Length: 257
Image 1: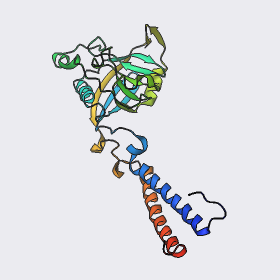
Image 2 (image 1 turned 45 degrees about the vertical axis):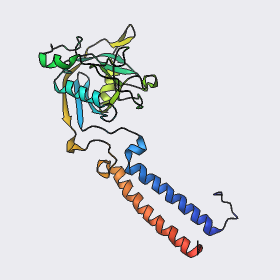
Image 3 (image 1 turned 45 degrees about the horizontal axis):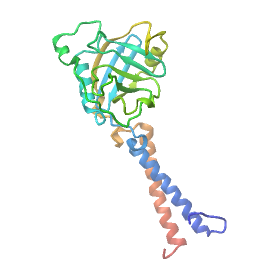
Image 4 (image 1 turned 30 degrees about the horizontal axis):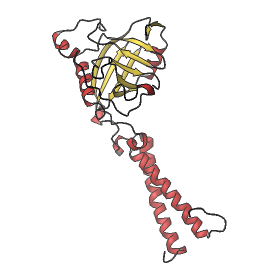
């Protein structure tokens, strides 16, 4: 039994406590060295999509391992300028802010032939286990699960009823203040939709590569934040020290074991 009381030999109590500290240090090491294990967060793409809106900027990254076809399509749309002059037709505070379909009158600028080529292309439903939480990007669609085109939502709160029903393909990595500003806009009810009373326009949009080509959360030290990297170094030192301490206790107090 691992249960100890005051009658247990001092050496055994010391040994057990040290082993517990050792296991704790190993756990901290694993969680710090492998962020994807600690947070179960999908790998982020190198590409970033930026919307410059009338309420501020929003920067988004993608989950290429979760929804590869969707990610490639959204990037193609963005590179062809289809989201520029589009708008958020729906803003339901605590739920979603939804970008209008680019081929159905969402844009104030007309589509050219180069843009029309892919504007109505439909996508397979790439449903996954990634949860719908604030900041998540999720494709809009009709009743047909394979009917998504260009409209997508930015989640403004948790929506578990959407899980595995709509394709999650990325998340917002910068622009929380913009989302709050959008939620503060006056709205009106139009059928099932809550819509802003003013046009929240995407004045400009562009794709950029992540600085240094880091590729998001890949579980290596180079991708860690400064605080976690320092904690990783300290934890490694603690592990080494604990290993030596356990061996010394075994040698001195528990010979032959």
